[in-house]
Length: 78
Image 1 (cartoon, one colour):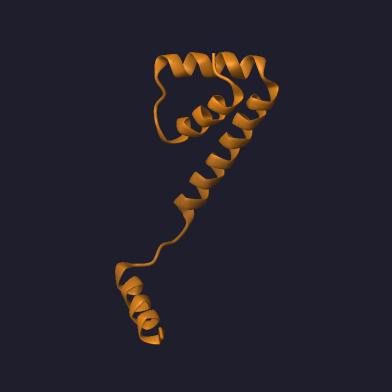
Image 2: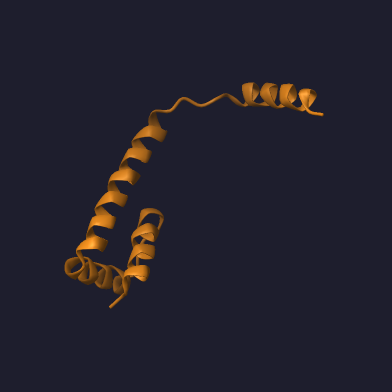
């Protein structure tokens, strides 16, 4: 079983990567017996979901506009 520090790392890792079978089981067990880590996981999930929603709806600049901005910034630098 993991301690809280390892558990928080796994919760964060789970956002970007798949966990091994051992990691999944250990994480579930620890979250079941540790309310602070369970709260951390819930809050992390909410933040992650919000970021995914926000970034998928955020308009982006075209490459042409990015290059134009770079030229302006570079010409104004000292």
